[in-house]
Image (cartoon, rainbow, N blue to C red; front, side):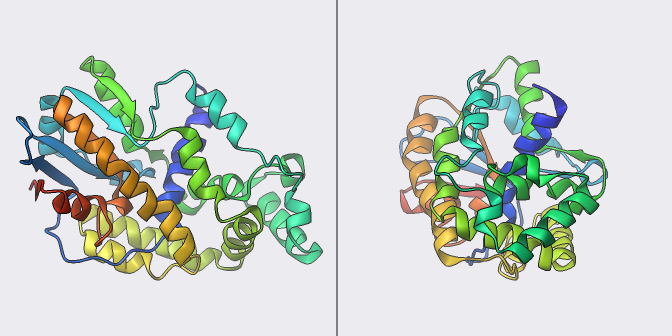
Length: 291
């Protein structure tokens, strides 16, 4: 897998962190949680990632390394070492209903978005006219950060290989893209291209604020900043976060019962009444922050 493709994948995953809003109850400041009880003979662990971050801000705590080593297998959102993942992703990146970026936008909107990509990213979107809007949008995230970047997911993949642990995914590429696609291509184009360009400076500031929240392991403050996104959308939030969280719970329960597992998903999935932490607790598990 080329570096450009890897960067696209982690940027794409990051979009689930950026284009959503959450409201939650106060939790201890932590990104790492122990899952125990409810019939589990050994604990599993849940870690909230940020899918792309500046290398200078990347931190891997000793507690995280220790719990990662204690687990027998690793589950990310996607099985990132599956040889079928890249072909499935390439297939899912394109609109198949005859839509193009140009016909989803008005002429003035298209010219504005096209010029932005050309000037800021050196990308000709005319050559990518059939790509889904959120795919194009995800390509702007490294530009927003403006720094050499690193991925927690990619780091966990390397750690798993070094420790000869199996890497698996909580969902398929089709499921993840399907959650994005439910909002429709027109809404994607409006929210993730037009609004993104119109609010570029605000979006850049918001992402940097969210990264600072993440570095503090302050999920509560992170949720507050997420709610400030001009791209927030209740229906999209439900499809992208809440429904996926609910789908993951029985899978996590089954997996954790079979083997002690290290789960790593976007931090935006952890908090709130419909977040993974709260949903696991509702199922009778003890979910405790690991300091």
